[in-house]
Length: 136
Ligand SMILES: [Zn+2]
Ligand SMILES: [Zn+2]
Image (cartoon, rainbow, N blue to C red):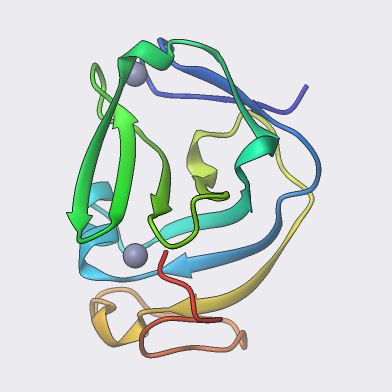
């Protein structure tokens, strides 16, 4: 089954269907919320994401106007993000998945905010800020 969870295991969820396009986002907010160089995000229809348990442990932080980051209130694991303009979609954080999804990495975004200590070593398209008209 295509499940994911937070680090402490209180939140468990499943995703249905293919995850499709995955973007790596280097924006300052993604860096700070993960403590790493980027987030790996798949934008999927909200209806394909389902909590199995622990939804009550979700906390949300509005990191910029209309941009919401959902995380575990116990262990701080990022679960997904959403933006107000696109309520029908969630941006699932791939690190929480318990399986290797069939997916395709399509772009590096917010490369203008990428730290110099991380070097991109592939030929995928790089975008200085948003990609595909989409925040992440
Ligand atoms: Zn947790
Ligand atoms: Zn970002």
